[in-house]
Image (cartoon, rainbow, N blue to C red):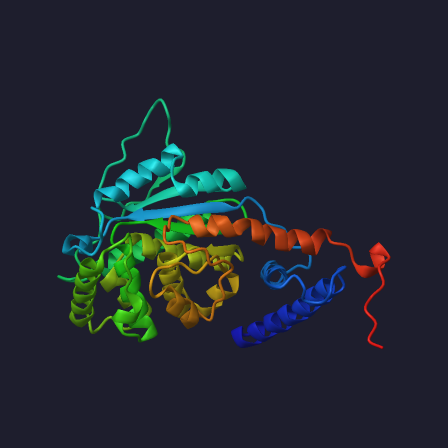
Length: 353
């Protein structure tokens, strides 16, 4: 059977399973559709796992961290040292994502994708949560040339794939850390969605009006410097983010393994824009946790035709929004599995008379 025939057969199987799942949801002791997005989530997860009894196992929170050469142009309100300092905070359990991971039973792994710092091993307290996959100590300054070489970009994507393939479970929640990475995300969105950078750029870590104007000026110049970066891989190479490239690899691998992908905010979303341009089927595995307050995120979600679960005014990153959305995702599967049907509960169905 050729690839086209296989794809057709898979589509037919998925359509039949979706019908079965919808019938099961409609037969639960509730008015049809009354659980809203939770019903759509349950159906999506069931189709992804290929079963009408989906189960979420050993969810993995992955936070990829890296520094950006473009930060030297003053595009962030914080210095680059905050990247490695926040990684230490993750490992010490004091960051928002650390708290939320503990609360919701998420296994937290922090990946050094390219932090400009050496994390010394500690014999008295092994850093089991930290994976060293450093491609280089930060990307190059994209205002002067490509942020990465093609080889570095390919290696980062490969590392992201390998990290996911080496972890248990069937769900990954994706987060990031990197001073300057809202600039990379805005550049990727502008180029790959064909939008003006002014519609994509935001305040990031809290720039004032003057800082935002400077950031916009810098990013316009970066786009002009890289007119050749028009496809997903070349744009990723030009505009950078080792952590974003590893997130691309992580998403591609997770989708191939039919793991659920819980997408955090603007920066992780930019990685999904790239991954979906490489392999559109990635989107079938994605749940978009929230719409952040970062300017451009709404545009990004519209580009991806994605509907976020939450809107809480978040703009922290780290995977915090993904962790907050996780209990809703768990609830959707629990309701499908454990909620009674009209017949099993002895409840009368609606009358159309």
